[in-house]
Image (tube, rainbow, N blue to C red):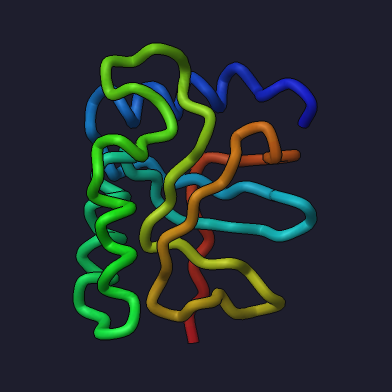
Length: 124
């Protein structure tokens, strides 16, 4: 999208302001369908940092996600969010979601071409 959807920005703003991770959302980004729950950026960064810290090879990168200096916007709310931060999320591919256990994704709101509230789940 050339101009981000204002309603989607409002949803992201509410997730950020209330520090909620219960909002389920499905988005289309460059033809890929991503489904999962939104998380506030600070929570998302913390979880990514925790995962990286457990890796011998990727541990040093955890500091990039836990450092306050690397936030994409000021925590004081200097403007509306420009990214959606998904956790427990999957990219839908046919009748399956990848990764099966869910992953952590960061999506630019301006790149979302379609969206719906809720997530898709498959049963075996």
